[in-house]
Image (tube, rainbow, N blue to C red; front, side, top):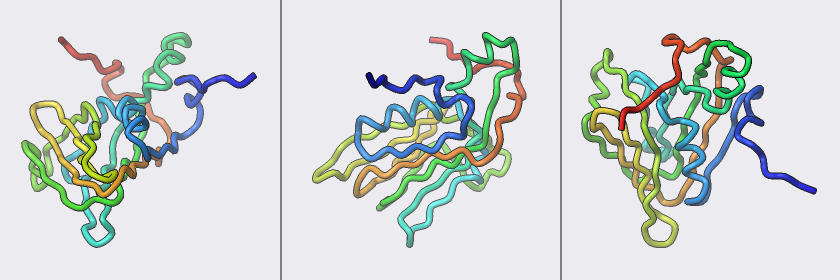
Length: 159
């Protein structure tokens, strides 16, 4: 009998995930929710049609285990790379402000014609980055070992 993977199954290994369909995008979004990064850690390589962010990602997949074991929550540096990007537009995010730290709330995909569409990165404080893409091509990869979350707390949101 085969079983679906559980969220916690990735708790001890670096994540390496891809999203190539609209159904894959919410998984990436859940894992990068509340990631923080300096605005200077965004890059768009127009020639390679690639947009990348170096994130400090909260390890949601390890939260329950950390609570059971009574240990600190963790973050990890991760690369979120979006391929086949045709254009980039942003609002409320000034890449030139080296002191600006951005908090990523969600990643969504709105389909267009023939597999194209828009990937929307929504930030706390009304910031957003819209990526017009030829197709869905997202990759999330942890690039460092996990480290103790500086706040010592899990992210929370008032509704």
